[in-house]
Length: 557
Image 1 (cartoon, rainbow, N blue to C red):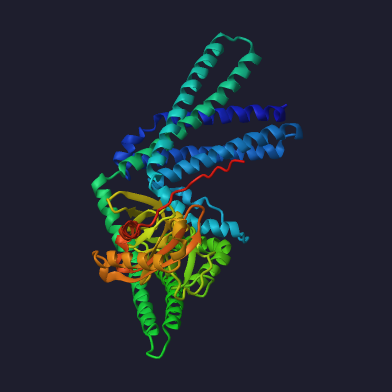
Image 2 (cartoon, helix red, strand yellow):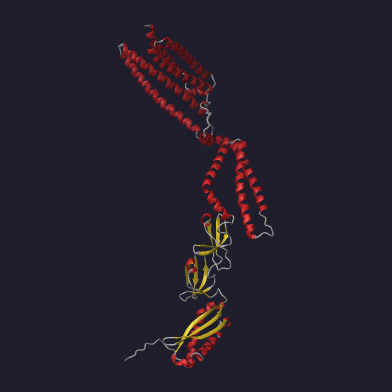
């Protein structure tokens, strides 16, 4: 009979302990008052109270273990459950005692478990951890304060609900007379009392932590000043040393590059340019690698894990990027070294027009000597082009200031030629623009490009003068044309006049009149053409020669 009553006495004893804990925690001073005199008698009193409750719990745990050893098998399960609950309460009391004793010290840093197994993911995480921690530290304190406020608010709501539940249970206890029901209500009340004590303990602990965090706040200007001086003495100095190391390496490699790029008097110009490019780009690559290594070494020596992690991430990003771009990089490198399919000073066709490769670089320059402006192309577009030696080939069929005769017979002057448009002007000032590519593919006579040009005209004489058609007629016409030209303003530019019988036409004997002029008189092309016709007509009038016109003869049977 005594053995069967052991669990009941244990529960009653545990209930008494819980009530004592609840009363003691309710009587504890407000955390704000305790924080105003941290390390004073109030904190000491809190520690004494918690230690007293802890001692009581430890004694209860000892008694409960003795009861488990002597209890029958069917009751051990319930007693062990009570023991587990009592152990949890003891752990909470010990944590509360420790937190009040150390004040605002954050004890969560000791909760991490160290693993001895190697995992590359964990290693990468360790490298990234300083970066993430620095980012989190910017908002760590506001987040902690907000979490504590949320925890206090939620616990306060739970405490209110528990008080209402206990009030309802007490009302039921006052109205119940049956012993079994009363015992169940008392057990239920004991459970809610324990929950109430735990919630109040959590509120007390969270309030202490919140007060410690809020009390440690400093002004914004002071925080900025402290952070600035800490940066200058720590990470700022590390960055300055890394920058100095990078500048020293850059200066030394540039000096060595200039020494190796000096041209020998006997060296060919093209060979020198190729060697110069090879040295230039090689030293750029070596300089970048040496600077990266120097910066990492500085970060390592200074022990700045954050900057070291950023440097390794930067290097890893470069390696991953080069993995997919190395083939393209090699092809572009051949072009930059002037060893590819397209080379400097050679001729290449772009958009249907010939250009000279003036410069090969990240943005290469194409230029046509006859056109105003240049074409600037990125390296990825020019890398697939093929050039060839230019020789003495013409770059464009006309130049600025040239006079040309179009297929329509119009005489035009080239006012301007760009990479996009050609602007032409006739003798009265009317201007016409043609796309450069279209004009390049157009057939026309350029009167200025050569040393001389010829003006050809055809004139017909009647068949009645057939007897003198090969002797007197061409001679008289030639003398008349020469006389007219020698009396004009273009007399000094006349080089030769030729008149020959061209053919026997349908209604006349047609003569071919050709005047060869110096190219300086190209502007007078139309005037010379008119002068030829005028001279032929005047000759026919003076000699009484018939000038026929097309006739239609009708024969009747």
